[in-house]
Image (cartoon, rainbow, N blue to C red; front, side, top):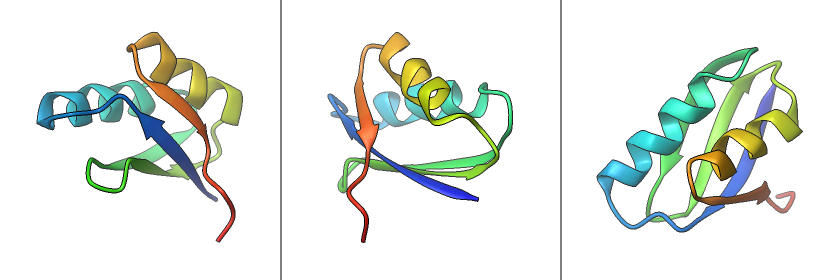
Length: 69
């Protein structure tokens, strides 16, 4: 399953690494790809959406489900 999050507050590569690490630490995440330019993260796996958002927020960034395409 793929989940996409809108991420706010990122400004550099360090931010991308912090958000990626936070997402990958959530139970059920198989992979996470964070895009600084688009301000989003694509997460593969069976992770709980609320847990993903909480992990990003704990790192000091904003997160919410991305609008459906």
